[in-house]
Length: 478
Ligand code: NAD
Image 1 (cartoon, helix red, strand yellow):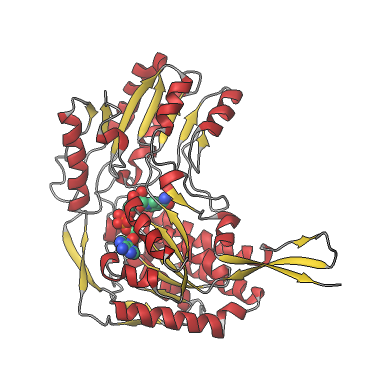
Image 2 (cartoon, protein in one colour):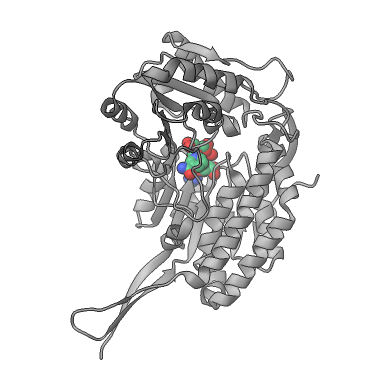
């Protein structure tokens, strides 16, 4: 298999200005698969400045119909290359192939959605008191820096890039150092589909080495970041210096609330994958499960039984549901959480260790913790691994206090057949995304993002288009 290994700038692959490389390891085999050049601050300058030139000289002023046509072609080319994208993602981060194919197809759909959105994204006419004619324009910002994490590298690269381009901006995309391959391929495929050189630049490398240069570059007008709350906060501080626009999609510790009147059997059978999918490396993981006490024991029994049936194994088997974790470090971090849980007397209902087979790869069993104290780390912090905590509740008001006691507020589910309760609780949960009798968080057409320390701004839907434009009001005297 051919791996992209250089920076993608101005429609072609280039060496880095430094000799630094990142060695990528397949997490399922622990074998090195390739080396990818790491961008240097000099490359940041080159990429941003030429993106700005591409914006000023062509992309900004392209008629909407032309931009639509190019982005529809990008979507088609991505669809034609779903298998290649999926294979790269699987080898790079150990994502199960079925999920990798779904996510590659999702990326193509995101481009399709925003290609269609271009001609439906309008300003307003406003009847101002003094008469005359008043209208608003949604104008592109210029160069957008898009910074993506390693857990959903391809779809998140697409859901930042596509609306930013659709709104008339140029993009410098920085994938996570662990997962640059599909972002680089996105740059190449989009260029092959007709995106002019410079409109989408892709800079692999370490955030610590060149992230600051990208975020603080004077020609970068907006930073769209997905990643940890700690780095998101640093980026916001850097961006504050010259008041750059930021949107931040950050961590989560989402609740899954099950009332006794719900179809709780269905909830128990489906909930394990709402936290263990992507081996728990999911910002929307519903890792705090609140169950009404009258059904707590049978619910836990069913949840554990469903967890024990999950198929863990090689990512290249279509039936695999859980692959390895992304790295030895990430697994070690999660194991520290499990040690902490043991030390504090939590009960491990299943999992808790490394699976016996295959004997290599960064695998970790999906783990269910009971009797966790609400002051413990496993209850309070984002674990970002396959660990669920289940707790009983007696009273709706107290349960909601516990749900909202988290600094995070990204996603969540609630299960009940009582309509009034569903609406009351949905309103009360402090999160940007919530599903009732379901575990879905992401719809291309709907806004996605968090309350509180889970972020600022929204990806996806028409809301994302708004976030990649400046709003101008124009008044014409009569
Ligand atoms: P991370 O914060 O370590 O890195 C994210 C990106 O930021 C990477 O590209 C990294 O190289 C870059 N970066 C790091 N330091 C930087 C700096 N100083 N300047 C600029 N860029 C810098 O996060 P991660 O470990 O890749 O991803 C996991 C985290 O992302 C989890 O907390 C998860 O919840 C969160 N996440 C959130 C969402 C969401 O939509 N809310 C989605 C996926 C992941």
